[in-house]
Amino acid sequence: MDATTARRTFGAHLAALRKRAQLSQSQLAARLCLLSGTATLTRNEISRWERGERLPDAWLAALGTVLAVPPGDLERAAAVARGEVGEQRDDHPHAVVQERAGWLLAYDNAHGGDRVADAAIQVWRSERAKISGDDKAQLAVVAEIAEIAGWLLFDAARFEEARAAWMESVHLARAAGDLTMQWFAMDLLAMEAAESGRYGEALALCTEITGRGVPPRVALLTELRRSRALAAVGERERAWQSISKARGSLENSLHPRDPRWSWWVNDLEVTGHEAEVALLLQESAQAVPRFERAHELVEKSNPTGRGALYYSTAQLDALVRLGAWREAEEPLARLGPLLGNVSSSRNRRRLRKVLRTIDRDGPRWLADTAREVMAG
Image 1 (cartoon, rainbow, N blue to C red):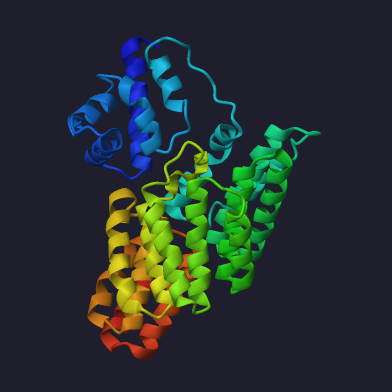
Image 2: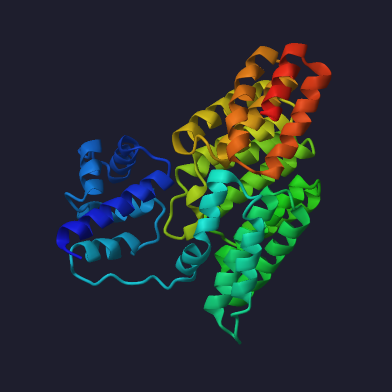
């Protein structure tokens, strides 16, 4: 690879990391300035890095922090771009998982989990068959793929199968000595328990996770799960305290100890949970503006994917509960194209419940619109 191509490759990698973090070039520049205490970095300089015109040598450490990249990853990539070392294959278990199962997550993000849940199970079983003896690296690989399979099954509303996958993920991660994946699988088990109405189990799992000195983003994610379970049982004050704690720690949670999988815990994630907590506490008027904000954020990152379906459905849910029928027409209209692009049984199950409420309590014109959306 010649020097120009190497720099452009690095730039493309940097741009992908920025987009994954759901930051514009201007926002990335602002965060780097805030972190470094300088005001000299501009969006134009970020653009030069991403076009491969320059390498951000003096900013690599700060970039790693803001973009939640493990220490050394960007330094190694920059060294390759400078021609100091040859391009190397990353054999870390997480990198192996991304190679073998990353496409499943990409598909889910764009189109939902229904169509790829069975494919994930197949990849999971195939990798499980490769475990031999005390091969901790392969155990870690299978633990993470089991976690991915569980998520896709959960999105497909196959909750018992998802729970089984995450329980295996916990077991394998523990055997591999991969604490961060163990915590993540436990966190997802807490999510499933709350979704299925086992709130005591969800809270117990959250307590077990946070009692172990976990990395900041793991602790933040656990507070989100805890807030939802507390809200579901009517613990209003504690639920808001928990979600406020998560919000307060969001900007401070980028830390070298944060695991590679935790990049997606961002403003959109916290905002969505704030809205859901309000909805669970029957504070629909508080939920609506938060869902509107979540919709604005998802429009910038993935306007036609699973997240857009989730937040449009949730916003409609909040407006219907509030009896805001005119306002409900806009998110309802958005759902038509999204339903044609995304297959997510979990979201469709929630939508059907909302549409039954419209049919029972709403004005006839809105019920007719709802039927047209579902038929189209």
